Amino acid sequence: MKLKVSSIDVFLRNVDDPASKINLLLEKDRWLDSVQYYIQKRKAELNKLRYLKGIEIIKILYEKSLSLDHHYTAIAAMHNMEQISNPNNYKEFSLAKELLSQNPRRKSGFNLGSILGSNIYTSIIHSMLALFGNHNLSKTNKEGIIGDIECILDFTLQMNNDLKIVYFESMYLRTNSQKTILDIENLFASYTEPIEYMTTLRECRNKDDWLTINKQVTTYLQRHEFLSKSKISWDEADEMQIELEFSIDRLLQLIYSYNQFINQSAKFYEKFAFMLDSYQNEDLCLESIPVEFVELKESINITIQKFNNTYKPVELNGSKMKQLLYGVGY
Image (cartoon, rainbow, N blue to C red; front, top):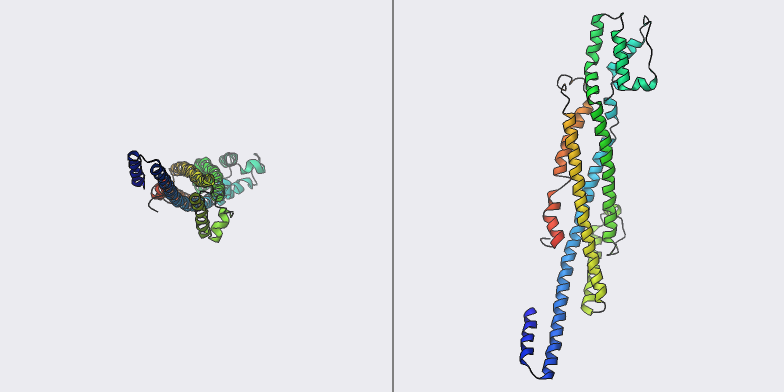
């Protein structure tokens, strides 16, 4: 078409007859309109591909975010994380405390109240003072009591603060995870507003209604083509084009935010793994260490791998990103 327009320009330079020039100019305008129409049509086709790829990416991001939120919820729900970090929740330590507090020959000392009695530091200090100050227990008995609780005390004193950090920072990450889910849902609502798809992302996912979106995108672009071709309202056609491109730009911003969140979460979990691996007497106290602690370490190590593979799939920053940006390779 561009060659045709160029050839008309050549004729225009060599024609002197006014009527012939007018006819050539009219023909040139018709060809220019055709060129403009096909450029717009090609642009619309690319935007359709980009837009539908955007829907696919939103779907992926949503599934990954829901999966990650389930993980954070499971970690945050581990109330036994608090329990395993306090010796008062261990049977051996409770028995030792009871033995010391029920000694009928004990003439001095005092009992802690419920608050201080459940506090890790005051209860340990109180129990140790009672044990070492008890002259009615033999050295063997004292050594036996110490042997029963030494790993519990060593583990809880060393890991109490670290386990609390894991718990509260997991709660923080869960809050951010829920915000990410809400951001994706809100973006989906604005993303599908131009094509007049009013179903929420959650409902769309539950009903597996993705095909309806494809149909409404096709209807949207058919109207755009009609407006462009018929010249009824080029302004409306341009506005429809802009609506799609603006939605795609907003999705690109969300992808960036999502990647930032995943990178941040991965760093948190790498820190968690380092902290929990820092307990030096794990091998010596393996029988006394609660199984929840071992499971937590395994879960954190698995999650670190997922951050680099499952939660941040390569295709989001590779082929699918290329398709979203340029509409190629669909």
